[in-house]
Length: 145
Image 1 (cartoon, rainbow, N blue to C red):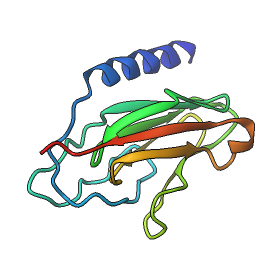
Image 2 (image 1 turned 180 degrees about the vertical axis):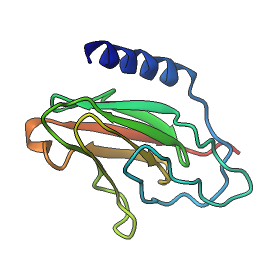
Image 3 (image 1 turned 30 degrees about the vertical axis):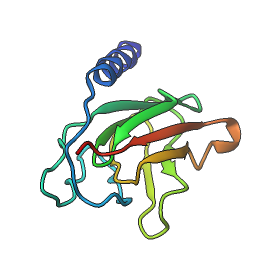
């Protein structure tokens, strides 16, 4: 199990290094994110972002790794809860109320979140462990023209 955790972190670092901006021209708004290993389909627009995750986020021991994530609206994140004892959430509390981003990932499982928010900086929390310091930052960059 420890080797898998190290592998996930290595893959995450490679994915973060290789991430590129999408050409999505749809209106920037929050969308729901889907629990489980599948990704949400991209929103409609003249060009669609890749359905492949642009970055891996590991949730374990009451922290997000990385704790600052930079995406472009329409990008999908792969979520992995490496904890053997706690479920975690990937929650953006400042997302518009009609479509908050909130994914629960059970212990030792994977999930995905498609981020469709306006450009800006958002707080990232685990609703279960925010008081324990499980917080981070999501930076959404403007969509390239």
